[in-house]
Length: 377
Image (tube, rainbow, N blue to C red; front, side):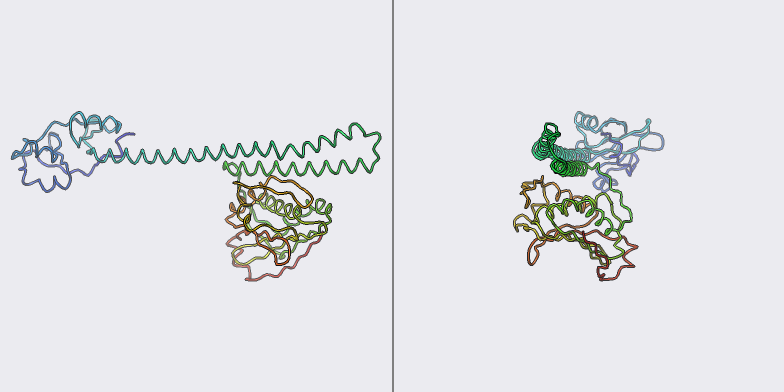
């Protein structure tokens, strides 16, 4: 820490042969005056000089104060002030006087610097703690939630390996379908893990582009229709014809995939999962509706946080990590949107999130839009 930016350059110069009575007011206001004439620098006059040497002329009151260089550190200058018992020192640059430094201002700077440093250390400590917690949680999920599907895949492949010749086509196809489902679940879990970890560390890029949200819904539903068909769940989507917004397409896909997968997971056989969009001049609201088991009131806020986020089995004993909704919340907030869950009047849940529309779109949108497209699987 150098003193260069702590130098007071607006000093007042007085002649060494001024009378003290003439300069007392300025001295009290400024606490120090530079004493020099056209040919010579004599020193710095302080209030302490008046107390120690109550003379008539300025030059008779001066005490010797060493001139310090502007490149010196705050620590060095404070030490010089201590050994010379002064509160003010003149500062030079290349041998020329450029200003004054005051002890109390140096101390204030050191105190503020230490406070700022302490704040930085506390923030870095929090970040480090959060990073370590993220790492521990990732290892925990890897150890518990990834082992199960891999064990299932290994078990099925082992059975096929030992009995391939004796199994008929139908049984072999059944095992392969089960392995495929487990592999997809594992892949989605790994994606959620990586997305969440990268988002927490700030490494996940945010690349918005102008997209049709309704079309993204259909793409995600198409990816999940086989999973829904296993429980004979009907998937539907409704959206306005031009449901466009500036979004990160990959993030919106992840949000929808997690919400629709959860809806399928917690819906009984022969149930319904619907995705529909409404829009106004400020945002598009996406709703994933299901006829499932619903969400307990006490868990409505917890399900979007990683802390104490306990998972429960789906209606067909499907397992999960509890990480999907946390990722959804992070990605929605990256879009300056909101996400929440509501109860349905009859049965199930409504998971909703908003995506702000672009400023250009706001002028074109009407206050209300009726759904014009319907897709059913």
